[in-house]
Picture 1 (cartoon, helix red, strand yellow):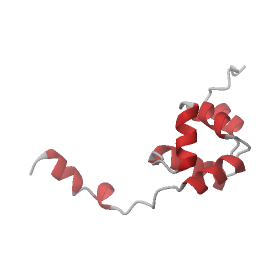
Picture 2 (spheres, helix red, strand yellow):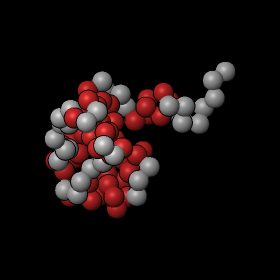
Picture 3 (cartoon, one colour):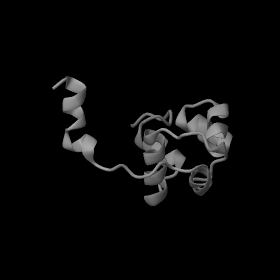
Length: 93
């Protein structure tokens, strides 16, 4: 068995992943976080055009989908997420 086949049989890769986030869900999630498409792009580190593509129905990477779903479910603002990640430009004193 080749390595990719072995990985495909690993339990983590066999689990069913949730369906992909739709364009409507993307727009609803960024709105729930108080972001518009441009601010969402800057927060996510993607081009403004990419955010517009997601809002228009292009596939959304799973990492972005999971981040947005978790942030909305746990009511974590973009500002708080940046602070938690240590990317808010403030040093702990």
